[in-house]
Length: 131
Image 1 (cartoon, rainbow, N blue to C red):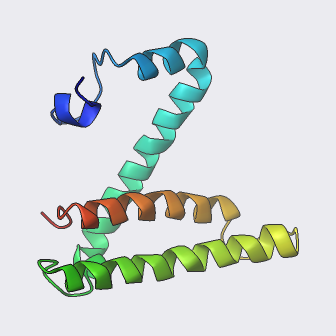
Image 2: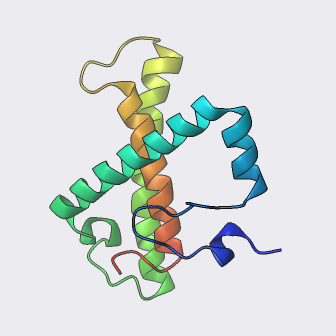
Image 3: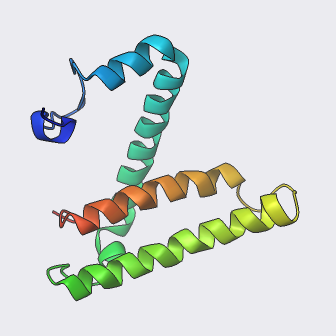
């Protein structure tokens, strides 16, 4: 049985259009609002990611390296872990310890950042960052 990754080739604009995957079909049938919201949030994060990458470029994640060696990838991942930890600590402080509203940016922004950093870490590990 082929996985989605093996059987699907990226097509600009719609990765899963026409997918016959049973899990996707099940969720879309039984939880249509959740499925639609999940996809909408992913698209919004993709859009934000693209705008930020236009500003930053790939070197902020690659830490100025080419990401060709395992040590360079590790350095990049450590940088991502620090960013992720910052977001986790902020959420812990606001939600768990003090149960109060943020004074600067909404806590939902930290959740958005965590989601994107997780994807970026996978791209770095897969050797595809900046390519």
